[in-house]
Image 1 (cartoon, rainbow, N blue to C red):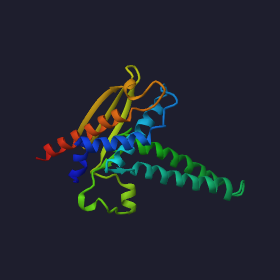
Image 2 (image 1 turned 30 degrees about the horizontal axis):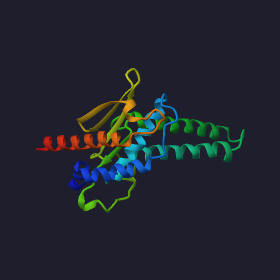
Image 3 (image 1 turned 180 degrees about the vertical axis):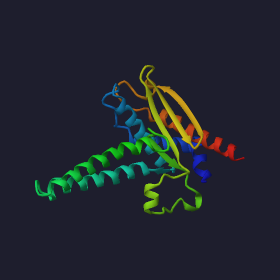
Image 4 (image 1 turned 120 degrees about the vertical axis):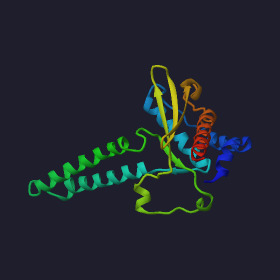
Length: 215
């Protein structure tokens, strides 16, 4: 594990550098409708993903690879069913393509349902110092979830308008709840500093708990 990354998340000077980069990235970005739950969660998830990259963590995106592969297969079914095969000569083949299209598209829903932590917004690993500049490309790494990954989930409790940030790894879990009004200005701009403070605190806390468990 690369202790330097975690130390940067605790060091005030390094934290300010990360905050500045995060602020500049989202300076002009704002949520058009704060009453739309999907827009709110999506925007916070974007900040979380950027925070992961800027902090030097490795974002794990197997869930998106799985969805993209299934959607690519669905497009192939759609292409053959609507363009290449002719009706009515190839009616059975067209029917097969239609069924295949809907099955693969339904599969993208199952990807979310059967992910390690359903509904997670993003995931990350802390790269080891010896491998931080190397990335092993393989179909296995694209499809299989990383067993060392931690998963960030962001949820809105509509009755209270509280946002819950949760980070989980195996059976370990840390969470913090914050009122939505503290995370967004009335005109929709995101308080990236507070988002960073919350997520970075949870990242450090989770990995401290993980180290305690190992010892």
